Image 1 (cartoon, one colour):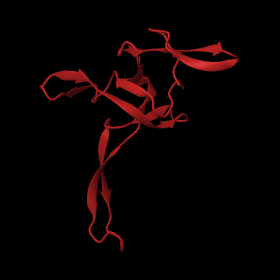
Image 2 (image 1 turned 60 degrees about the vertical axis):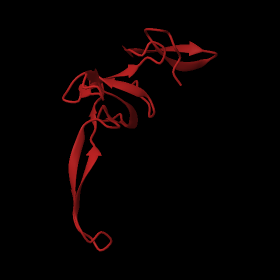
Image 3 (image 1 turned 120 degrees about the vertical axis):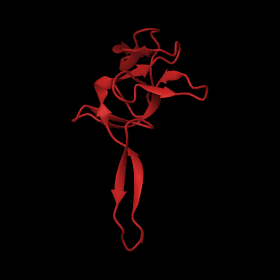
Length: 112
């Protein structure tokens, strides 16, 4: 899997592909990766794929509630955002100073 926690990604498919900005224009949804689930080939992106979760009342929380949490989405539905050109890009690997590093295919920028 090409993703790591903290990467900025763009949603390229699904119900959260577009969001409406302050001016009312449709723009592609972006966000940072919060969690990576490599066995399931899924990632959790902040602000994307929000679902409602029902919380039962307990002794600590006397009243139950409904909260919104981010659910995982398939990794194939997101692409890494190129830091230089600010466009979605693919990721490659190369050896630099004896270490394997990730880089963006568009601008050849080395990722952290």
